[in-house]
Image (tube, rainbow, N blue to C red; front, side, top):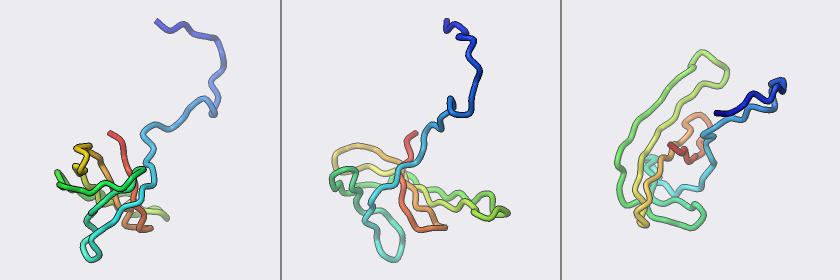
Length: 95
């Protein structure tokens, strides 16, 4: 059991978890399908296992619109990627 240290909680004691990381993705030009990922070396996408889209917070100044892909790379590694449809960037999301 963790003992209470008695310290006051501060805003800087909290850190976000599972923060998306920007990643370099080669994509099929007209369909936004990932063909390869550079993380850190180039690996080809051999299969797209799943695909889904999230559109949320449309009423805010910066809405969320993302196209997610669960992919298998040529190394056998599975990875979840998404394309931010608002700004066009690609990100890796750990689950």
